[in-house]
Length: 412
Length: 133
Image (cartoon, rainbow over all chains, first blue to last red; front, side, top):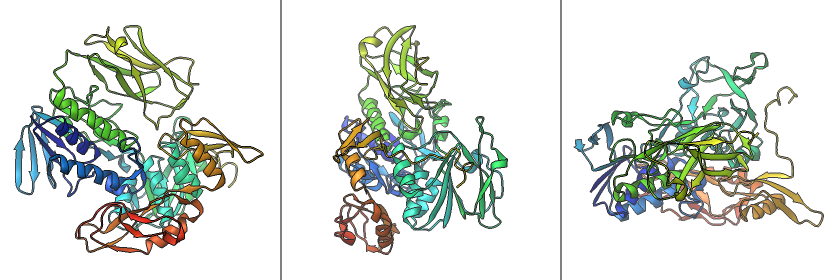
């Protein structure tokens, strides 16, 4: 069996390893950069590997450990190899240093990762000077290229990368004036609010946004205003920060270009393809893993999804049909969106649309209760899960709809 | 900062509430320091929450990571580095400023000690990845 994995980040490496360990004869890992690791080499902070390696590692350490295992396992690796096109029959066109290559593996696993939402997608009015960066670009320039991207910063969006960069800039002796978050709750993990902002007394302005950018050559100032409950800025309460840099940490989106070419349809809530519990897409032999499926909280989650897929791609026999899975009533994201019928427990990963205190979650199918669970709290920034026991799933048939929803009256 | 400006800002948690930063779960701990100095902790999902709360209310510590200038590598300009144990939170900026002045030569292996007992912090500065020469 020939398995090809596109993308050499944590998801791609974990998927290739799992496929090889499950007995696939030929596993090829195709990476467009000149080294493996994806975004991890620039994520120099700790917090990686706590669940996957049972150790608190930095991003580069997490990447290097996986890389060593990939080497040892005998996975073939192509670096500097860009997949130009993918076809629904799994044919691939890959541009390599040795020329254009065409291949058609038995199993194709997309581990293509995510991209940052750019300024254009959030429509900030004002000038177009230098000094506006996405958080990941600022991170790359600081940690990989060793450049100083600015002196005085304002950060829009409270995603984890922005919070991490607020701390990084501060430790580099630079000044972060504040972080504005459009939503009334933070986008990043609570621990990062604590150790990246509160530790350095950097203010976080919830329900605020950047209303303008001023500057001719370089950013000279940004204006910030609170927003009303509809997200409209209250311009009479606008204030100005004299900064030379604006950093955007407004979220990630799964990279979907190759997947669309392969004939897969995207789920609006996740931005990635519909997958089953083994991360198989709606086409036989095509899998998608990691942040290319949905944005996970941690690299550990990304690697774990990839392990599931890599193993299943080699070992699973064809299914006897799929049921659909849908989130409603306060549940924004559910993975998987399809359940391949089988006699095993099903773990659903989900994200709440807004914060909820002490909510109860219910999973039903055809009016039958499959599972119910209470949570201390649900936060949109954190992916949660619920397990449905195999015996409850016995009555579910192909084509049925499994619904995940918060119970009314709970989670006020 | 006037009242109007403070609208919408997250205030520091009250002394009795702490966000545990030991792992990504981020439990919101309720911490009470009793008269005899004993620390009582609620809402922790694992025992590490208690250790964190005790440490944080007595002598707060943090991890430290950064990058240093790298010489003799064709590919890389910076080497990611970390301290191999937590240090006094109050010393982070001082340590960061010192680490900024350091330079390292390739080749380097992940885990190599670049400077032992950095600034007498009790922690070693180690390489966070390997770079060939």
